[in-house]
Image 1 (tube, rainbow over the protein chains, first blue to last red):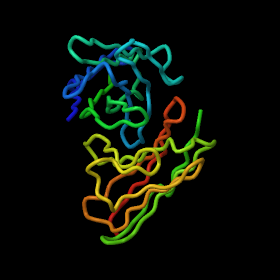
Image 2 (image 1 turned 180 degrees about the horizontal axis):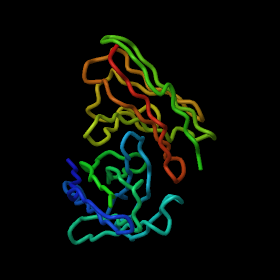
Image 3 (image 1 turned 180 degrees about the vertical axis):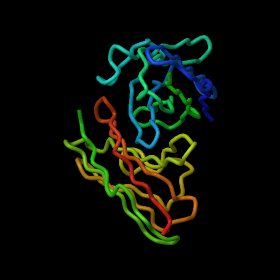
Image 4 (image 1 turned 90 degrees about the horizontal axis):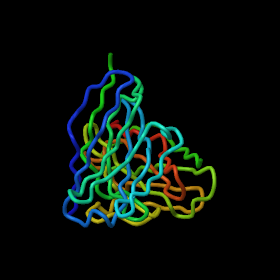
Length: 117
Length: 107
């Protein structure tokens, strides 16, 4: 049974960067892409992008191009999402998920990122 | 980008009711449509993938249908644990757009 465990909540000031980690267990990490989503307070789910742990290839939603970087460390089965130049409207719960070909089956528990001065 | 219109935005229903949610894509997406259940403070839970395939462990009262541009999620007999927000998501092309969600509330 696969599991994804994310890092803890963060509080950041506007203009700063945040890095969220997502540690996989229970399956072969390099075989499945990892996708990242977020949900701002009172809003819906928003897709941010993906990373292929095997190759390191990434794809980002246009909205986040230039501000988001997704990386991985296969030696510890962990994916990372870094978002820079944070604004107040980046306050959200960020999720990672395993992408099993056409759907996300395992999700992390979510990481609350609060951007406030 | 593909736009997904989900309706209704909210719905009130009673235990035992049959309810149906709809998602309409702005272009054909074949059967590349998934449904998730989202409860406050919890991660989304996959219910249906590829438009109509029930994810393992999900009760059979949930069913999905559709292809091309029009899709439905039906709950045949509502249970107390089903009150949540439901999202569809297309995975035909990136960005993998979500619908706006349907909040299912107890009448």
